[in-house]
Image (tube, rainbow, N blue to C red):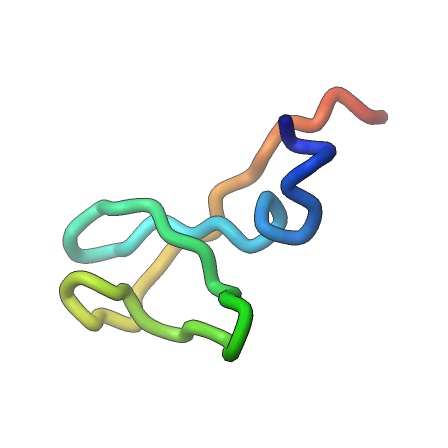
Length: 52
């Protein structure tokens, strides 16, 4: 699944205020805030792809 998702898996974030997971890219623009609470605090979500 991660192979087919491409760049989306590298841009996952966890909101620092409400805790939802969202991606920082869309088809039209770069997203720099949480879509729910509009906080700009986030932590990157590391994804294990199995490659070393």
